[in-house]
Length: 258
Image 1 (cartoon, rainbow, N blue to C red):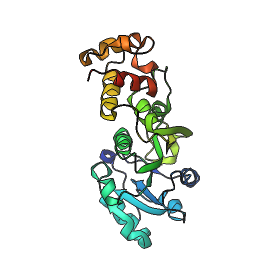
Image 2 (spheres, helix red, strand yellow):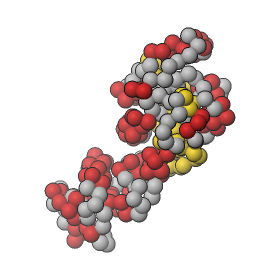
Image 3 (cartoon, rainbow, N blue to C red):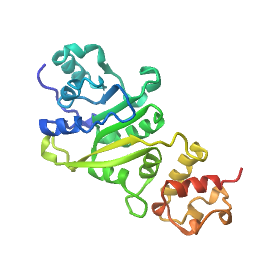
Image 4 (cartoon, rainbow, N blue to C red):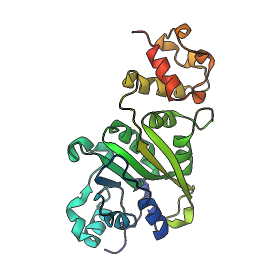
């Protein structure tokens, strides 16, 4: 089996450009002193082979495509036991890697890229670095700061726990098949915030609720929470979610009635 057919329902766009694959691999910094590296959706192994060469990490690859799994096992037999036929979104990362610090990397399927980020956030105490290829618009949204129209749920939640960086753009013609959008690579490094200074479950809830009605002021978007806005700093009640950063949302959560 020398060819893996890209499958539309899996959102597969296989990277063909060796120089970009090498550049992605070299974007790993080792932040957090992890030794375990998990590649999501290795496909035909274009990125994998550069990751396997790095002696600082133990490479693992996870894919749900049986054809890709077969191709990888045939072409990288020395890594056979590290090639996992699993769905990342359904995998217990803590159990799989025994609570070790890990990095996550990959040319992520665009149809589940946001879900991958939420999964990383769930495992933020374990995932100390992430380097990933995303649709350019998603990448821009994740790294956006307060005040822009692209600032959203993922911007705030990811930046609460990670330092996020937009690394470089990738054009359509380096993939097979070419996607209809441009792509970009971003990097996460776990910040030094062990826990937010508020109820973290409530933080996630408030951020999602505020952005789900982003055209409304916070007073109206969060009306059902019965917040006493007079106890909060500034004019938060009259602002919209997109102009807020992590600290303002922490303040709102701490203003929730007990």
